Amino acid sequence: MNDRDKDIEILVLRHQITVLERQLGADTKARFALADRAFLAALLTSLPREVLRRLRLLVRPDTVLRWHRRLVARK
Image (cartoon, rainbow, N blue to C red):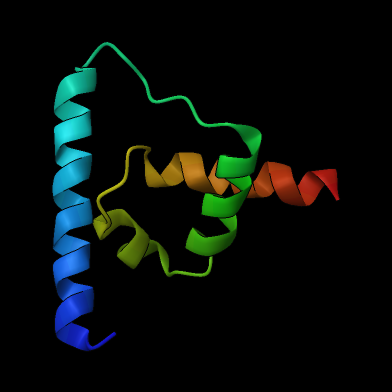
């Protein structure tokens, strides 16, 4: 996959997140299974906090960091 294809995929994924957030509304929170939390935490905690804060996520960056801390504490 070349850089252009990756950029297009990223834009599509970001737009899908925007649509999901709009459908959920301000009152509803997205629910993540434990496996989803572990996967996201493992991937995202390798990024610097300033990059993490710029990402378009369904959860706050602090939530991802909390999930990671819990994962590490379980081991």
